[in-house]
Image (cartoon, rainbow, N blue to C red; front, side, top):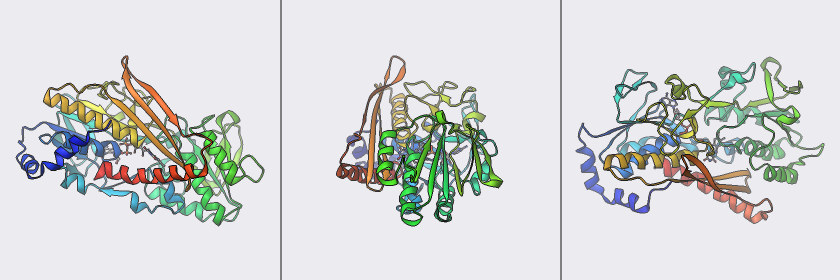
Length: 427
Ligand SMILES: Cc1cc2nc3c(=O)[nH]c(=O)nc-3n(C[C@H](O)[C@H](O)[C@H](O)COP(=O)(O)OP(=O)(O)OC[C@H]3O[C@@H](n4cnc5c(N)ncnc54)[C@H](O)[C@@H]3O)c2cc1C
């Protein structure tokens, strides 16, 4: 869901006129409050402003900056510094006149239409948009918990200090050491990313610790782009042979990690096997965020049910829920999707203000995944609203038999996409 070039040009060519409109905005102006300044929330704020100069927009986010997950697996093999993935809210504040409240949202007062925050603010809203990302259910693996995740067993499924810790741990393993990656059940954010992570680690280990091993223990029996990853692993890491650097065990073969024995750096699988490793990276199952669950937006379900046309929550029509925390299948949980959902919800709200018909959405997800620095793949999908639900309209994958030049080209497209995507959301 993209805004037209005309919309964007209109905003920027408005120049002083727009600034005048902004500063003159009445206190009676309609109010949009957004919870969560990640990909979905920031895109919501920026694109709402592009469409509408009169609305008051407040973005509530506890952190002073945001670190993008797309690209964070490349931090692990030293090809991207984490600083490149880190953005502040300055441009949203200054160029788009978004009020940034550095605070944690706590409670929605549905009847008074007010959002309460940890620091005691009570923000009135006409529309509330929630994009709080997922919660990680560490406890689903017996013996694992959030404290261990912040210590020596980082999941690193939210880019930040855990990403750097994981990098340090596996890069400092003894020669011939083992990394275990436990891949979660669906649905979770960015389905190909555990396998991309294994591939990038293997690229680094092949040079610096060539007898090391990466064992992927999976809670699924297959995974996104599996033939592509396996072909790459066969070519580069002896996959499927006794000398393999990467091994994968699916749930059908007992690969689900059920228990972590942290003291002995050991996991126990559904096959009853005890596996000792030097580094254990458990990527936990996910569910709706604590904020969504505490406010019963999930209506007792794992994820937040939404109305599939406009992403209004089923709990309350003035509250929209987008991004990873919403139940919008068959859409996958990606940043690309979250940003397109945001752009669509901005059009819905703008239409409500102007009394115009927003029309019908066509959402796209353009997933650019990597297996190595010179090996990229793409999956593109389009979705439409049809017969009261979200329907997958078309999907297209890059072919398994791509020649090396095309793989390298797709990898460079992926890197360019990461850069332009960050700018699309935050600049
Ligand atoms: C390793 C990895 C690689 C990935 N690669 C890609 C990729 O290549 N392409 C792609 O499209 N996607 C990718 N993703 C997925 C993408 O990062 C997520 O789908 C996307 O971030 C979802 O956006 P969101 O707004 O739902 O959540 P987030 O971006 O996680 O933002 C949620 C925000 O809400 C805030 N928040 C939470 N609770 C509160 C509260 N109570 N009050 C206020 N704020 C709150 C958080 O602090 C956070 O800033 C990747 C993910 C991972 C883990």
